[in-house]
Length: 321
Image (cartoon, rainbow, N blue to C red; front, side, top):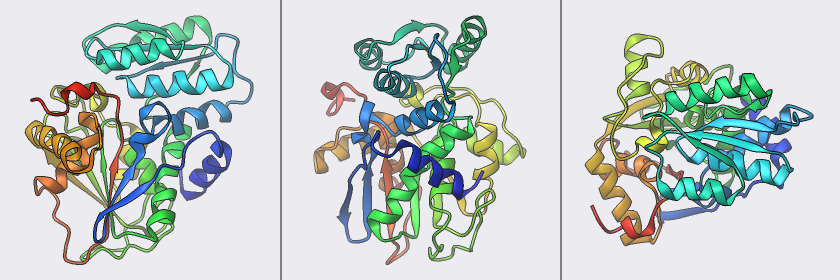
């Protein structure tokens, strides 16, 4: 995969997804408000690109496993394209997301304690029905679709030194890495790292919860490995291991892996609401937690884009533990 795949995806999904706004919250620090996207997260970009890349969709429609956000995106895209969507979610999926899936007309099955169990059930069902599988993070079309967020960041900010992005299965961070790979990397101390098949670009700070370190553990091992899944962001960042495509791309020297605690994620979520009236779910606040908690500290004059990636949450929990 390379930058050209992201450009092709941008053309394919043009007019179907929102060009979400960028807010400069302090000099040189930008929020990319991808939580304002259709279905409440960036996931709809990859869902549309996967479906539109497949040509004629089968009568049985599309099928996906999800912690919630991907399912909402697939359900939304399927509704817009007039096809059936069947979504498998784990039991930890928030009631807000399950209700959203039903409202979008998806056929929903809750099964298993974690995402991987739902994924196994979805794969079995797809083999039975012939529905098109839309993977949450480990399909080239999905990664390329997510990468269109990176294109917009570059265009809307005029270029940044660093992009801070959350990691679960890694498809979003990988896509953003590719989508920013045509721009020069100028971050202080950053070399001209290269994405998979791509050119130079800004540093990518890949942020994970300490309790779900899929990328960190894969980088240590030299290949994707399973990790335990728990914590406040488990419903959206709860992949048991990094995707193969994401691992290849995020192994780039452009990428810096950092971890944040659940407490930092909760505080970032509260702060986003208190200071900016941005209603983020825990996963959506994870990238910001890295800056707020000091897991990543920008150098003086460094231009940084922080991607706020999901808003599928109960607003009543924004000011409570």
